[in-house]
Length: 268
Image (cartoon, rainbow, N blue to C red):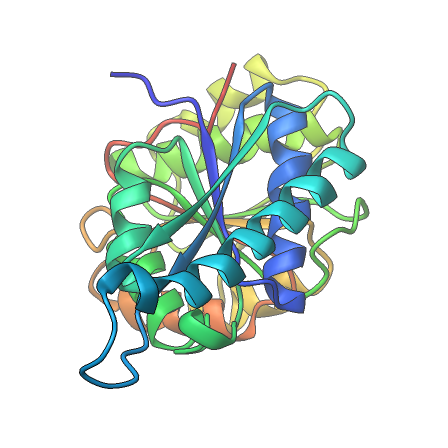
């Protein structure tokens, strides 16, 4: 089944608000519908009170966060199809469930309240590294329209997938692409994509040194970094997990992590 909704998790924090605005921009750019989700938990005061009574304050706060986020998204992108919901559950579990039916899941770089295992702290890192679908972690210069899309490219199918999505994003944004290779491109994928997207200026770099440091440095002048989120056939093979962790903590722009089954997030 083709999933078309973009889902953004927010807790009302500055980081969450930034994620909502990034997701709204991306939904408008791709023609997707946006769903805003705020996860809340019970806070049990004691043995007295029904589940509904105990649930009410947290649910009310979450619904207020959702209402504000939906209004913000619609204000930023008039005409955008936006829906919102407050979801009861554990933040990590709830967001991972949302990712199963989303074309793209968007989260902020840190949070507060029920999401304050600090996105990215434990909740954000778990979601970013274990979601079944693609995830964007919004951080750094989240809303700049200046600079290229950066692709962290390895070999095999994953490398071609990263390049394909990165070219599509650069084309949508009318910007250049920087392909950072950790191995020599022997598949011909870059040449084919250059022919498909002749309007996208391309710069090719070979990663010299630690790939994590190279990608973090590239993020300082980029709009978006696209990276394979799996260890197999990935940008750095067995070293992908620590590189991903480092990039998610230190990148100066949003980071898009792909999965083996991904094509392009919410492509139309």
